[in-house]
Length: 526
Image 1: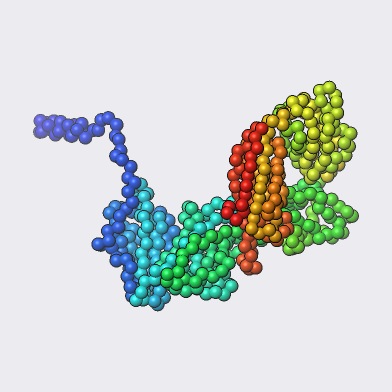
Image 2 (image 1 turned 60 degrees about the horizontal axis):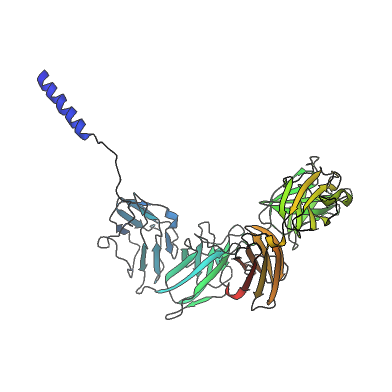
């Protein structure tokens, strides 16, 4: 017995030893192949006279559903279908309450929702087409969609075709055909019937309808008439958020300052209250701040806000606070500013609205105590000092206490800086030659470094603009088609059938020292 037990233990040890793996395990090549549909076993595509029978699809490897919300049926179904995966088998079952439209071509577009189990490779171009009638429709449209503010493509936006032409259709009814934009903002709708359509794109919350004010929209100005042998242009759509001014929250946490959170940022806000007047406003990220003073004692504790185009925003109960911030530099600079442009502006941002109380307390001199040519001024919370200085010269700037007075009557701390100017050859020049076929419109230009605007100006067709002494670097131009001539960008309004004003952004050739850049811009071909 003991001998048999010993032999058994010896055999177990040998098995365990043989089962051990020595050395490093190296995986094989990465699986980049998309799963393949086995058409011989699957429900046949392009069926006619189809009834709502269950569909079955077999693939050559195990699958998983990545995002079932990206599986689109066009025209949309009224009820959510049952979609299941078991190993290599995918089933699609219509809800028993679903009634398919007569003589209609349907497309089930799986997008990239069905992927393999190991590497997540999506099934490519997985679409199932069927018709409840004798014919399968074959017409199609295609296009591109971009955000009007950034000119960048937008992915995942619902693109809709309606065969009903009444104005309110996008608010009330599900579209006849749907698809979604891809990463490049491109879209296509196929297997369409011959008809006249309206084309929309909406940032949908999965009810297949446009729900303002929170959803963005794009629309084509004209209807589309599809017929056999008709041309298939590429439709361009601009996605925008309609102006919607609502006060989401507000606070009077600081004295003489109202802070607002708004659904959209207006250019300005006015008070309807004879006792209070706005003296400075600014928009910072998601907040809008208004500093105000009193023209007379406040008799009515309610103030009405309206935006710059007269729309009433809200009615608030005024509540004053005693909390105050002290006047401070918001962008603290070093004690020295080197290689500044000798003909430019020195700008200092403060945290509160300011006024120049005494310009005699501001001085700019060279190292020989000779007075330089300069002009101090304030705009809102900024102290700007326009200078006309000598090349390659050292200067001292002094802003003594009491030179600035803020909204609360507080004065500034001392500011002393050493300056050193560069030469004119250290900067570059930019010449802009602008043309447009529409000579009745002014175009707003913003010369920007990244997202920061350096200067704003307007040009009409066949006008030029010269920038002298630009700091070397990379710049871009943001150009706005100011269609209504109000000097700002305006969003669109679907209810008024008005498109958002077009914005185009172009990169400027890098500005180099002692170099001229010539830029010719044709708005029509941008």
